Length: 77
Picture (tube, rainbow, N blue to C red):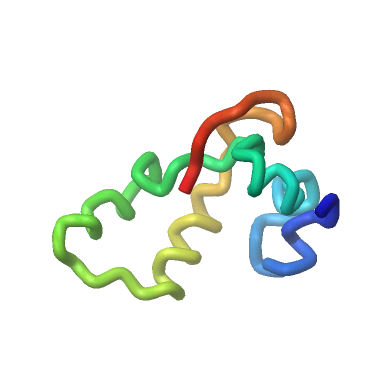
């Protein structure tokens, strides 16, 4: 539960991937931005096809956090 997500997602940017744990993800305290806040990804929800590879590429390239993991609650998909 307290293993960094970089263990499971080795391509996730190390700076944040080493701070965020599964516990943070499950309790919505990771600080990860909602996918709808990510530049270029929101437009795909309007009927365009988004591949898993492309979604991860966009998420990884915009991996700034809204807050330090574990300090706040913010529901996230």
